[in-house]
Image (cartoon, rainbow, N blue to C red):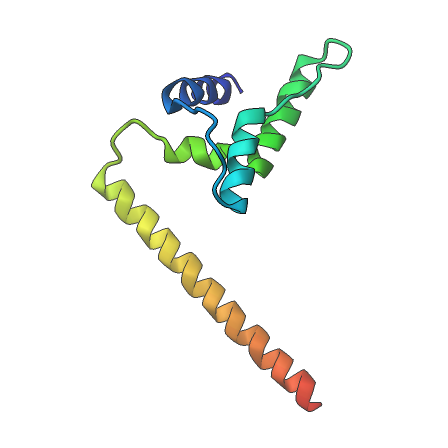
Length: 112
């Protein structure tokens, strides 16, 4: 949990975020969310529960993905190949599932 907090604080320091006038809706929401941040109340001195809630909020808001994208270290070519292979397999599985669902829906519509 500490590593997530450290990465988040370093990201905020290095990002140099300054509020600017908003241009479009999506960009506006993203900047507004960055500006507000995530707040978690510590109830009854239970820090572990508060950290768990903060991590869930970070995952759902996309901050965790943003932190991972802001990696400051080198990724080896072998790791890049493995990640590319996994992404390709995920894409192929998704396409196969979409084809199967389409076939099922066509059968259902035709009453077969």
